[in-house]
Structure formats: structure tokens, C-alpha cells
Amino acid sequence: MRISTNLPTARSGVPDIAMAPRLEDLGYDALGVADLVVGDGSPGFDAMLVLAGAATVTSRISLEFGVLSLPSRPTAWVATQLQTLQHMSGDRVVLGVGVGGFPGTPFWRAVGGPPRERGRRTDEALRALPGLVRGEPTDLGGEEVTLAPAAPVPPILVGGNSEAAMRRAVRYGDGWVPSLITPTALAGKVVRLREIADELDRPVPSIYVGGHAILVDDPGAVESFTRDLVTEHGMSPEEAAAVPVTGGPAEAAERLHAYAEVGVDTVWLVFDGRDWMRQAEALVEARAALR
Image 1: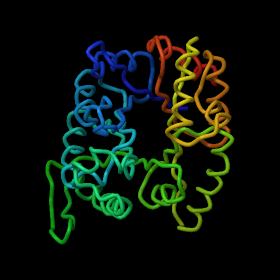
Image 2 (image 1 turned 120 degrees about the vertical axis):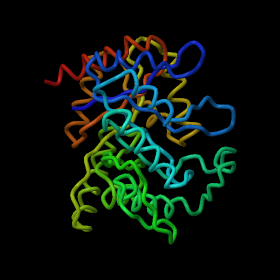
Image 3 (image 1 turned 180 degrees about the horizontal axis):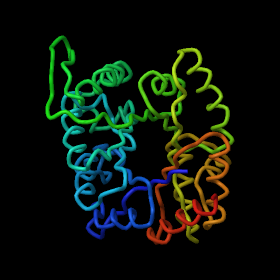
């Protein structure tokens, strides 16, 4: 199983790029950056720039967007940035995309993103991006556009737990990325994903799961995270309690095994609470226990 995590924040509050080589040395397959510039005062940093910084201090680890809000950005701009990042990193980019989960925020309004057209704009971007990144003449809003220098198209992952996201992943993606979901809840969705792939006569996408973990003794972090799931995501307290991966390496290995049993290829866990490095090490230990 592939494992991925985010970069911690330094004391200044910015992503700690210096930790990227540590993840590479620990044996992580990827490091991810979330696209969470919501504009209400919550900390957020540009995912493209953070991954560009990580590319300069690493040589092997994949660089993942988890996930990039496509409808909030001009497609040609995204394609040009992807070309650049592929060349800078030696083709290590993994492009996770989504429709944007914050349409009511000040940021969404500031960039002119129309919430009612998110799905259509995302589909249009996904149709155009591969040709643009490859440097092929591509129709973009009735204009033929060719971008250079050409680069390999990164693996494309489509985020979201909905049926629409699953269909989008089957049509346009190499992988599907549900998040904040237990293995038990995921199992039924995997069955549906395979049905959609059969219906559309397309390959079944790889399955990546995004989640949160507290792999040290930090009850306050667990309580804070589950409370947010209840208030921000509308989960019941029972549902919320089952979502985060908690405990030590043994408990994390059990969760990884449960995800693998339902067909998950990659798990990306954001570490909450204290002692980020110890948690990063614990996830590596958990993955080793599966072998």
C-alpha cells in the first residue's frame, strides 16, 4: 500500500518544506498539499507553490494535490503550472482534482467561481488538461491553444464521495479519492464504483483514501477533530468517532489492512495534534506491519 501525508507547519505558520526530505527518507510514497484557501482568515497556502518548493529539496517522492479546485482556476493556467512543476520535479506530480468544497466562502466569490457551474467547468477542464499538458493543439473555449514546453500528463485523481465524483473519476481519472470515510462505509461505494465503470465500459480507477490520524496519545486532538466532523460535516457523534485513525502503529496497521481489504491502493493521512514526526514514523511502522 502507498502512504502519503501532508507537510507540517513551521513555527512561523508556513508549510515546513524542510520536512519533505525527511518524508522521502522515511519511505513515504508521496507528500500532499491541500487546496484550502478559503478566505475567512483560515491559514492557507498556494498548493502549486508549496509543491514547487518541495520539488527543489526532494528527488523521489511523489508530489500530490489533495485536491486542487479546478473550477476556481483558468484551465490554461493550471496546465501551464503543471507543465512547469513536471519539469521542475522530474515528472513526480500526481494531480488530485475536485469541484471545490467551499463555494460559499469569500475566496470562492473573490475568484469569480460560479457555484452552480462547478461540475460543468470541472468536466471541461478535465477534457482539456491532458492535451494542454502534452503540448497538443487543444480547443479551449472555441480557441485552439498549444502550450509549451510539453510534459507528461500526471496521474489524475478525482476527489469526492458522491456518485457524481465517482462517475467523473471513471470518465476522466486514473484514480478516485473519497475522504473522511471508514472502510465499512467505503465498501459499498467501491461496489458502486465498479458498477459505474462497467456501465461506461471504462477501467475501474485506483482508489485513494484521504483521512486524518492522531497516532500519539492526544485526547484533546481527537476530541477537537471529531467535534469538527459533527459541526462542519453534519456527522453523528458515532460516525465522527469512527473516522480518524487513532492509537499507535498496531491500530494504524489494522485500519490500513481494512482499507486494503476493500480495494484501497493509497492512504493519505493528515496528522492532527502534537509530535508530527513521531506520527509520521508510526504510519511507516504500520505500513511495514502489513508486509
